[in-house]
Length: 175
Image 1: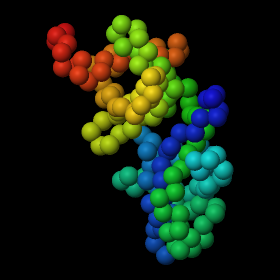
Image 2 (image 1 turned 90 degrees about the horizontal axis):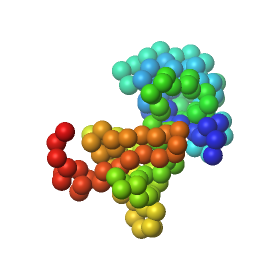
Image 3 (image 1 turned 90 degrees about the vertical axis):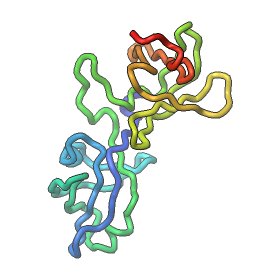
Image 4 (image 1 turned 60 degrees about the vertical axis):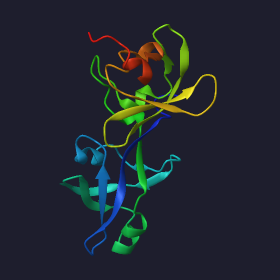
């Protein structure tokens, strides 16, 4: 999968706003108005979802007009629609920076350089980012907190990261 094939989740439709067909979108971007700069927003399968025509910021996203919606009922029907943007529409990260989506697919290795598995997703359940690891040996996925202690080294260009499994984190001596 190339960067242009990768879709990044940038928000979801929270529903209609007012009675004139405006749409409220919850943004997952640092700047909610950035949603207006990425071009058409896509569905998870890569098909067209919405084109934002006008927008104003709210505390957790934007409210505005979209090309595909004319009524409050149409807007409400889109509630919970997840919105994506192709990875290549984002600006290149600065040196020593990366997008969390760039971690997906990386090999997870332990301190002895053994392959533990592959990063399947990056999740955030409210207490911080977590890497979901698909084990190399099969079986259920497992999570590791995306902290400097549990993931001390990133080698994104080389396709891997170092993972200190949670049970091992507690056994380490403080630095």
